[in-house]
Length: 115
Length: 118
Image (cartoon, rainbow over all chains, first blue to last red; front, top):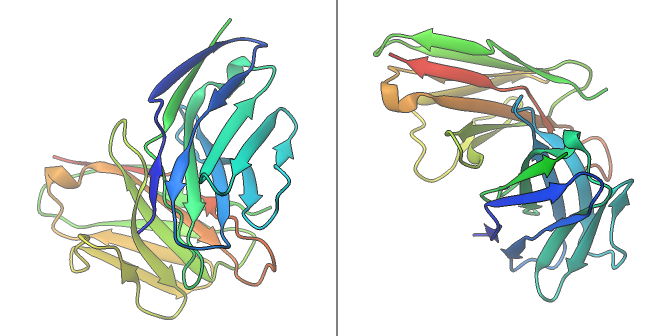
């Protein structure tokens, strides 16, 4: 079974600064997807960014980018120019392949953005 | 597009009663739906995966006779918590995906249902 480790239960960042959230995972698969989801206080899960494991290029979505190290099984999220609205729980989630393609969520990192 | 709704958003029930939660994909056909449970300050834990027209696949440790899942149409899945007890109080979230969208592995999440069992 896949395991996901988010070693930072809480992080804080000053508005406009950059913060990196870490995630490591364990999988025996060679091709898979990785996701970062954001859960604000409303508790609605929002997709932040996704990465396909067979692609070497790191995914970027505006202020959000990832550092994907396949061999190290590391998938960190960098948030640039942090905004107050970025405050939320962030979950890393690799997706199993074959069959149902389930998401396996890490325990999450609570991000606080200070004005 | 890709909106998923849940109903109700909040429900309170007495111990021993059953509660049904609906999950609907509003603008796409959801061939697969997932049900998660999230306890306070914890992560999402997958309970089961349901495919339209077939029996749900439950994760290890989830009682299938207690958490009944029905996915009778391509836009609706229901989770029924039978004989609910206070320890079943939690936040239940569904998600949906459409296998027909080639190359799209994204799950679209509902807003969640808060269940409180007294």
